[in-house]
Amino acid sequence: MDQIIALNATGLDVETVTVSQPGSGFCPANVSYSNQFIDFGLGAFTAHQLLVGHERIQVVVLPVGINKDF
Image 1 (cartoon, rainbow, N blue to C red):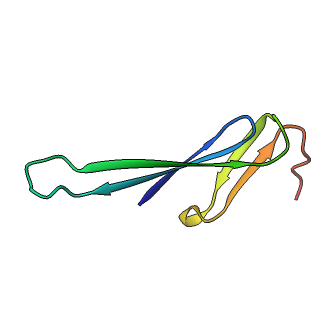
Image 2: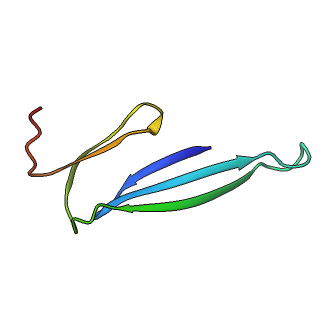
């Protein structure tokens, strides 16, 4: 199972991609997608940076205008 993380104007789209092998060796693999939307509840914003951690366990979105000094 693999995931694609995409940032949009109000949150994240998490696309999960599942590949299953066909019954015979002559057919292409079956690919299915499922989409989960994570709404931040902040309304529209402009993202500055999207950080995806090790093994996609943590995702951080840094919007424009937020102090990024740690």
